[in-house]
Image (tube, rainbow, N blue to C red):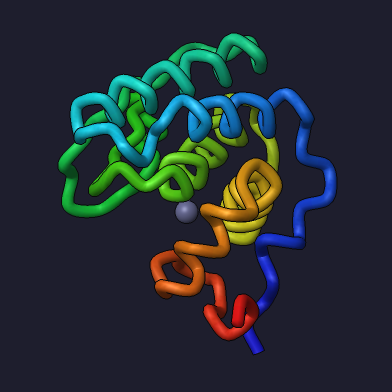
Length: 139
Ligand SMILES: [Zn+2]
């Protein structure tokens, strides 16, 4: 049985939930690609202000999502919020010199997205569109 990452991270800061929630309430899913990218950049800037870290550059249209520690760049292959949160968590842990594992990035990104929007999370999970989430949990 797959680990329930979306329930695994208990200490999600309310400010982060608020930021992701307001992005979704702002009509994120109805925007075109350019609109989504603008929102993603604004969200990352807000996170960085909250955590007082340097803002990473965000590169879209990359083949594989990742965080480049040397250049402080977040690479995204699409406009998935979960994917962005996952790579941002790697960025944050790296800059703050904290433990930085796949488990931590998955737990934080999935738990944060789940808490920010159970409706959207459930919809995407049912469509099997969220990595590391078992769609059978949402039947
Ligand atoms: Zn990762």
